[in-house]
Length: 337
Image: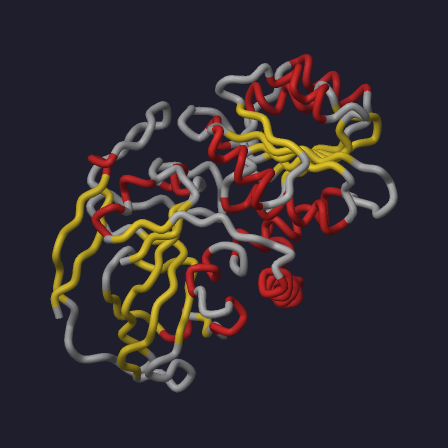
C-alpha cells in the first residue's frame, strides 16, 4: 500500500521560528502482511500543538518529550480507524487514538500502543478526542482543579492567556463552571476576542496586539486577579502577575512566547516579577498533566458531559490534507487527513 507521510526536513534552530520548509511530504510503501499484535489504521485526525516546537530541537528541554529525528516521520496525537487487525484488543472498525501517532495517511501500529475510544463521548466529533475530550481538555480541567484553588462563592477573578487556543478556551470555561465570577481572556485578534465573549461566555477579552494590557486588566479585573492560567509567559505574564492579589495562584501550563528562544523551561522570570511573587505569596508551580493520569478517566467523562450538555463549547480549527500539517506547527488545530 502506498501512503503519504510527513518527515522533518530541517530544523529551525533553537532561536528560529518554524517554517513550512522544515517539513516534507513524501510517499512510502507499507508492507502488506501484518505481524501478530499489529493493526493497519487509517488516519482521520492529527493534532498540531505548541509543544511540538520543542520536538524540533535536538534537545527538547523536557525529559518526557523525545525529539523528532531529521528525515524521519514525525508523530503526535492522532485518531483513526482500524482497517485490518491481528490484535485481539483492536478489532476491525474500532476507533483508536494514540499520543504518538505517525503523520501518515495509513500506518501499521502495535495494537498495545493504541487506546480504543467511544465515539458517543464526543457526540460523533472524533476530533474532540485530540482536544476537549483528550489531553488538551485534561490539561485544562486538571490544571484548574489541581493548581487554581477555585472556590465557589469566593468572588474570584481568573485570567487566561492564550485564551482562544485549544487549552485556554477550555480552561476559562472550567474556571467559570467551578465558581469564578469573572473570567478574562487574552488573545491576538478581534475575531478571537469576540468568540471568547459571545460564544464561550468569557466576561471580557483583551487583544494583546492592539490594546494596553496593564490598562485593560485594571478595567476588566477591578478586584485584582486571583487565578492566572498561563499559556504564554513573557511580557503578557509579567503584566498579569503584577496585578495579582495576595495569596493568588498561577497555573504554569505553557510558555508559548518563549518556544522559539534558546532558554530553559520554565524560562527565567524578570527580577520585578520574582519579587511580586514573593511579596504577595503567589504560588507558581509547573503543571504537568502526565502527573495526574490516575484522574484522567473521571475527568474525561466529566468533560464529555459538559460538552454534550452545552456547558462547554468547543473552538476548533480543522484543515484538510496531510500536506498542510507542517504549515500549522505552533498553533492549536486538529488536522483532517
